[in-house]
Length: 216
Ligand code: GRF
Image (tube, rainbow, N blue to C red; front, side):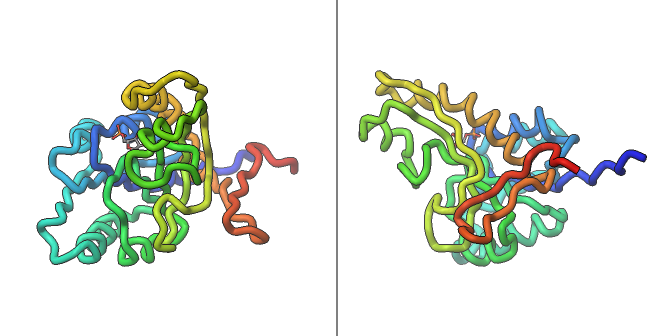
């Protein structure tokens, strides 16, 4: 008899911008391996909010000016996501750093997409950093976000790269990387939803991805 299908993973997305990565998730894994149940932004102008609403997903805005400090804002976001039974938080272009009051509520359950091949060029303006350094290969990393005080330092789940030997325009690089991001992020969420991503007990910095159909 066939195994009953697993419940889709309940995903919350935090975003600050246009939301093309959110859209990629909505267009691919949403309603299948995962269910995007909540989308929050740190500013009301984030284009991602309209994309979420168009897909019938609940949204909220947590502007820093409405809270005494970042910790209070982050605790409020965490409460809101927990209220939606979120199991995985995806940072899809979320431009604020998350503090312990948030991260401690979602251990090993926050992932971020960053437009560089980490550990090179963490933090803001990653593409500009890479261009200034003179790299010939650009890339994207999906990684866990740990409560370790670092920026873009968590264990790597997936990476994708493209060769752009002579490009010095950040927008051209970003345009090229978008198609990598829009494949890589849904794939990472699909793997996590399938329970295929774990940490190597001998080296917790390393993630291990189980094969699709392990032999019986
Ligand atoms: C992406 O390039 C992501 O890598 C970076 O912010 C951008 C967000 O784009 N962290 P979008 O809002 O998903 O279109």
